[in-house]
Image 1: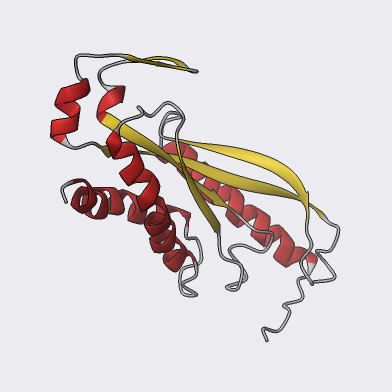
Image 2 (image 1 turned 60 degrees about the vertical axis):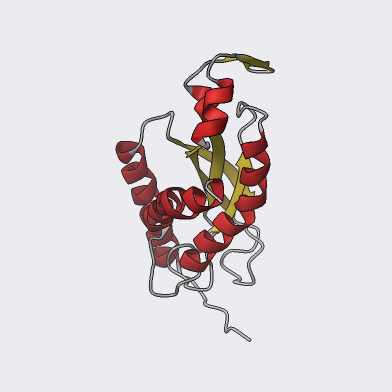
Length: 181
């Protein structure tokens, strides 16, 4: 059983400042098309008496990852445009499957090493409906697993940028292997 870490007001302020510093860095490092931040106000349900019921600004980082499709598939769809709920998908967009990677900061992140980022991923609705899309859907659990392993590394405190870099490496290596099998 993990001991509960009791936090004082200074530690709570440190958590907020460190989270906000990561967010500011990400906002400078990525365009709004590549990554964006959402916030919500949550009530912490941690076992720490200083956090229970406390309103907390929770950040979620959304990173758009473009998975290039197999060149043979690309040739099949380059001459067409697909229509979806979001409008027309042009030639450039149809050469990628787009995944949205979502990292959510829990209340005590990054101060408490037992509070790892929550990691989710989903196919972007504007991705073309082609056979490579199924490969992407099947590959998402692997991407989440790779990112989660990094998030749970107790020696990495501010993990957001590290995880986003690992996700980009995953696209270049793992996805490349999957699409060329």
